[in-house]
Length: 143
Image (tube, rainbow, N blue to C red; front, side, top):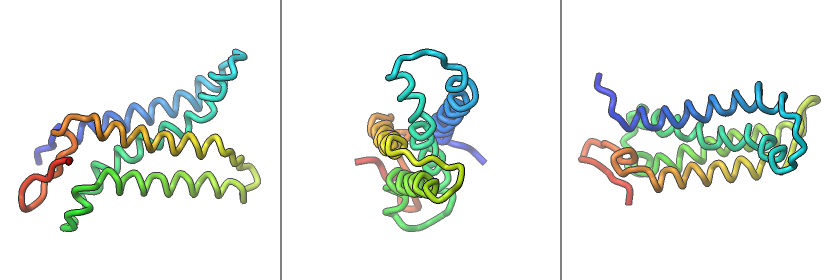
């Protein structure tokens, strides 16, 4: 089975976001002793911002594997991926209001929404060969 280069492109984006998330959560935030409020704020929203970019990048690879014949789903997989990711991330944030140890923060919601916007921007500025979708009737390309 031949894997196309666009799969690696989106996997690299997912991997970088995943590694960045882990580094922020496990290394950077616990060890940051500075008093710069901007850095503290950015480190606070980074665990929401990075998955909002990385998860849709993974779904962009997984959605075509469903072998769905729906052309809209194939042509707009980036939108579907972003909606699935946003739904899960925002549900998780709002569910934290009902958990004992959870902490709901509107800044986390904002970080998630900004991350989703950044993913859409990455999709727009990515080379067309990485956003094209193969289908039975030919090749659908980003408009």
